[in-house]
Image (cartoon, rainbow, N blue to C red):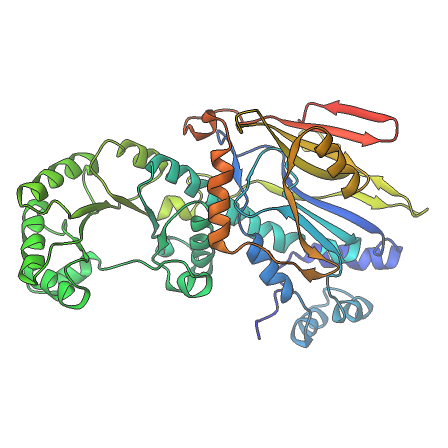
Length: 451
């Protein structure tokens, strides 16, 4: 049995619950929405990642005796609220963009409907997962664009929290990475695990030749040898010789320091001159999407990325928010609600989203319909020729079938390939496609600029 996830939340979720239980507003039907007002500076699209983790944690979002005892002893909420929490089960609906889908400002990437009480409790859990995973996936996507088809491998576990490392590895795969050094991510999500040796392995042996021979003995000549502990040129000679002494050709060499572009050309020529034409070159050393792009013309076969990936390459959060956009009033009618404060205004109403493609299949617009029901919104999308973006994730509290990590990765490739060329640029720029907001109510079809 998994440990409860119910206390992975901010205290004010529970104090709001208590106050609404007393005011009578707790049971009002409500619609919450996850979106971003703007993309992180210069980014041209975002990537949905973490949806599967939300559904996993939702299963364990239960207040057991242990959690309830803590709330009681800490006097966080009253005994009446504790009694309510003891029976808590999310019984509402959650719709969202498919994991791996690209998103833009105001995209309703996750919509939670239910009573205010049951939906508000999920805010912190949902945002903590999506903001982290979407930031890593967006960085991974930009890096795999820069790599032009060369494999990217995640190696950032030592640069982040031990649990975040597993989540980051998962998100990196959604964004296009081919493997991870984190074994727990391999076990939990079926991600390909990768790794051979660090400089300490070479240094613990008496000679570099001894280290290479020991690694090849256990991993075979197809392994990757780290050749820059001492002198790169000598390291390459010794690495190739060690593999041939074992009866095969060396799989790859790894470069982890210095001028990687210049070294890659030098090492490639050296390998070819030695007849090791099949031996590949992989590079590491604090890479980001710009460094990978700079290596595009170099004879590099794969990239290992750590710190910049797991920290979102300069943007550790996706800047997502979770806002109440509609709720039942005292008469039982559903009303739009929205925050109006300057610079943080939101747009009320249930949103149904679709993507408009041109005749060549290239995305031209994110169409967001603010409406009274899913059926009304979908009809509006169909009328305007937009591809629906939201799928049911939870219905009546029951988790629906959803994409695996590998399926999410495949979907991301398809979604990214749909975007216009400017989306693939690494330079600062506006979102790749505009977001158009339409309000649809009886006798009302107002078009907003999406800001």
